[in-house]
View 1 (cartoon, rainbow, N blue to C red):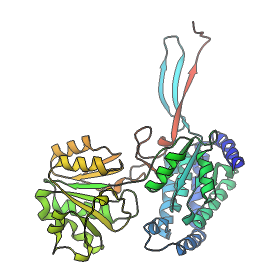
View 2 (view 1 turned 45 degrees about the vertical axis):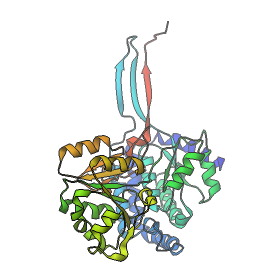
View 3 (view 1 turned 135 degrees about the horizontal axis):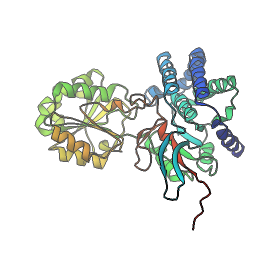
View 4 (view 1 turned 60 degrees about the horizontal axis):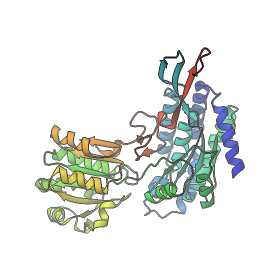
Length: 413
């Protein structure tokens, strides 16, 4: 494994000599190859899907379709069309001693990414890393092994077509041993990014000897305020919960102001059509009884407030004020995405000022927390930490900077 890491480190230095135009050409070639080889990729994905229970919340994340492959290729073309951050001058000034100081963006070098059943991540990570001048070491999960091997094969074909070493992007075996070695690749890997559930993220953080950027796990809330619009709330809650239940920006717990319990049946009506199981507190349970399918109403237990459901299930809790909603989110949120539905500018401003998350929405669903939606082309992950990048991570977020100083013979006394 060390030899693989060495080759990637060496290859990362060569990317600096590739022009942005050449990088874009590689990405455009890859987008075309992905569409041409879609049948091969879908066949490999079908082998992975055959080994997974359809009831598994990860099934949707694992599944590729012609439409999803088309979207991946489109995102890749979008990334190719974005301006490169590499070489961007962040700061320029002349010091009192006459030395010119410039601060410019440069790649991290080698980025390791550990992820679960998300074969689209293979292409997203490669396109963003390559565009920003980084090499990448990918470690997918066993559930997506066939899909990931087919994906990396297509990536390598595109690189070879342009005379570029395939070592700029490698896929490690889907084993625990490979994960352990990647997390300990000091001197070879500049930063490691886990993309997956809380258990994966905690494991990487607790065991890594290389720097880590935490991403992904989301316990996401929507708060329907006393001044909320019912029609707007109905649409926002439905979109946030049911657009794609397996993604990290999906709604997990709906908080509702006690004064608006009468609106709860209307707010939840679209969820019934999707068979969403609601785990509700006693007040909300009473408000929904007779207005929502009884077999989908479950009395909530305390553990429900900390669940990232990734399924057609949702927590529902009654609060007495915006203060109580903010306190609930502070105790149970993961710092990912939160939203409020309100017609009060004062309450909205307070919510955005006091809720501690990477993305805080007013009158819009958390489903918009996505690199492509933010104009980043794609994302390498959604950072939930405060040190370094936060929120959807695009090209700029996977660069660092370097000071470049030019003098004329000055010496320091």
